[in-house]
Image (cartoon, rainbow, N blue to C red):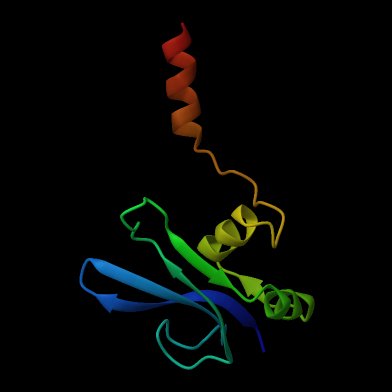
Length: 103
């Protein structure tokens, strides 16, 4: 059984709110899950702060038993020091465009 750490979407249209959950890889995005591991609000408040709450001890447990984070969850966990930051992706097209700009 493959367990994924993923974001589960809540909120209204154009006002997303996410729960970070451990779920079976075949389960739907907003379907069944094993455990809620945190919350993430990507909409900044009046002070310009995006709110995130993580249960780091439970995240470490799920990672230790082999749970695979999704791309976005890996980015969030890398940003907040739970995991090492994922390698940056680059496209060959943008690299070619930058090379032609320098000439």
